[in-house]
Length: 73
Image (tube, rainbow, N blue to C red):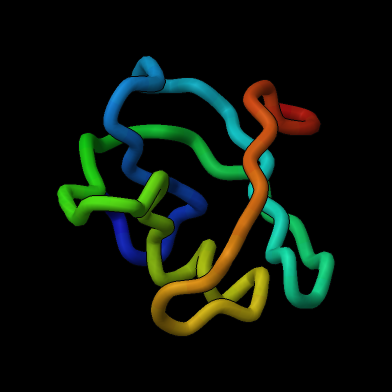
């Protein structure tokens, strides 16, 4: 995963899939492209690149909502 790109890791979504991720605490959104597998921690659904996490105000673990087929993706 490229730390400075709007990318993410997901266990099952195909590589190249665009996903809109919404931070449930502040409503900020980011569109990421799946390019890696993971996360490998039980209970986690997606791992955002550091750049994507910063874009929605996340540092560490946070509740988010996902929509497959992100805007403009």
